[in-house]
Image (cartoon, rainbow, N blue to C red; front, top):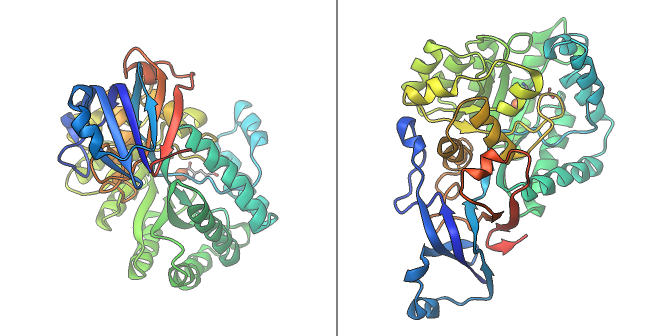
Length: 416
Ligand code: NIG
Ligand code: FE
């Protein structure tokens, strides 16, 4: 099938010589073709350019089976969301109210709520039910413009339930047009029954969970919640080392609640990304500058929990790349809306619209190991794009933070 989109007001994030990420000052650059066409065939981007270049000779090269007139509208590459926990059971709006009344995320976790509350709900939910509720969230984020998503386990916290989550993630991958990457996050919290013997739980992760996950090829990445009240940097190191031995690539939660040493540990083990970073200073920036690790910021969870904002401006001004993700989960960010993430990045993190767009496309593709195939409009890349409603400029997209401006979604070359 060949889909031609013509008369595009602005074709955003075009690449002629594909790169795998964009850093520092370059993040404020964005290639846009005005009055453009885009042709997609067999699930990939086949051609694009200015409308005036689309003469009758060119058109004859294409076998067009579908055509869309995008006059007044913009076309973006689909968002890549490199950090979510969207497989979960139930919800946690009671804790939301507790937070409004003054409890912190850590207070709730200490009294057995938070992640442990979601683990209890997940334990009581069958694999089929979990798949169904999770697929509803996947369909929701597809409509919000996401074309690739990373999904973590971490509400199982025992071998069987962790495997149940990862099997649901695999089923999502098999049944949805969205590109899915799976992460094993057994080290998300210490379960109640191991509260006085955390060593035993860490042993379980290292000696039973990781080998089982690897033998069934259920995950590509390994994550640890390296933060106060969860896992120390020393524990994180041991868990990452075990994961690496089984071929899992680290991507970790770091410095959400305090200066945990997680950034340094992530970089030491060559993590693909270190995520959150609300508590980051000069040392964290310096260590990231000498690495290939992508700092991935989650402004939705900082907003929802009232945490300090991650120092995106300092990072970019120091020459670092930055990626953005939704962190879609029931406790700290019950939203997978990447358009809202862009707006929050602009409003709260003071990122320019161009920087935020780079951070949800090419850099977030990098943070999930996909930047060779996703994250920009380039020949041969997967045909994942969305068409906006009529807009005055691409800057209108983050500015109109409450409006749904996405009109048509195309994944793998098909209109969804
Ligand atoms: O990224 N910080 C750790 N994990 C999630 C929250 C999980 C939860 O509260 O359910 C996060 O914010
Ligand atoms: Fe998270």
